[in-house]
Length: 367
Image (cartoon, rainbow, N blue to C red):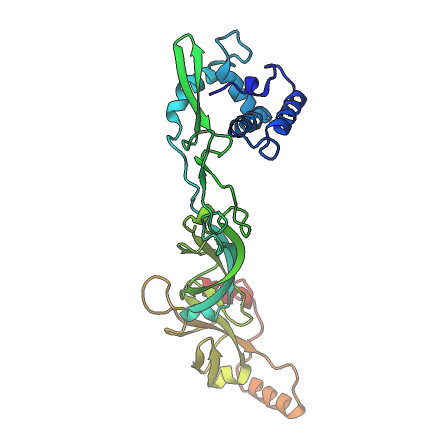
């Protein structure tokens, strides 16, 4: 492999501006539009590759280290790290060209579902903005009717080899080809639709089954529904992070549904029957005579379907007795007669030492 500095006709300590001027001069002389000869075309490729390496500070430093003649040369070694990298790094690198096809990235999408939807599960049509296969080139990255061409610089190997002179003798090292970026091929005519990527951004609709019993924070994995990879590589996965929306009437405790039922004082005294609308239809609730605030009525198997296992949780209804605040004269007289007929019990502190709402909350939590 020809020395890059010799190819451009410059000294090893040439500045970035000197490198650019040398390349422009040679490009005007050797460009195929100016000099159509085969020899000029080959020299133009070498000049272009040399400029690609030397115009990049990182690649130039690596090249200088590889071409330095011993410890006193223009580049030299910068400590033991460079020595080991030079002596042993080539053996650790991938042999042969690397493939253009790569696996696509995974994607994360947050989905909000209603409490009603998780009782039995639901199906959603989700719109996802992601990378999809280019329909023009079908992942080949090339314009229709064309194909990749073997790289003339690395001859299809994807690697550039250099010999390093050292105290241990000559050591062969390799690095990715700067012209083809290690692929071993170049695309002379990239696809105009995807700009040679083999994929484009698009919005697509995905049908998703959301199982019953999911809860906020749960992630559902959809294999192969993420982004398509470069050059039509396999799709990554799509992850759905669930958030359950707050319901104005019902809340959740595990697989149980919780609700509070306001009961009029007369119904609490005499007992009653209530037909209520739950998340999955009507439910009949028997209110026993003498029921107290903070008592719990349990309706079996009317909660949420269990995510793992079988069956459903329960519907637990907390009672809140409502005292009337507006009474007419007749109602007031009847209440007074009722009060006078019973043994007087003066108001006193509850032995629970907590309010009715705290009692109701704690009973829900301790079920």
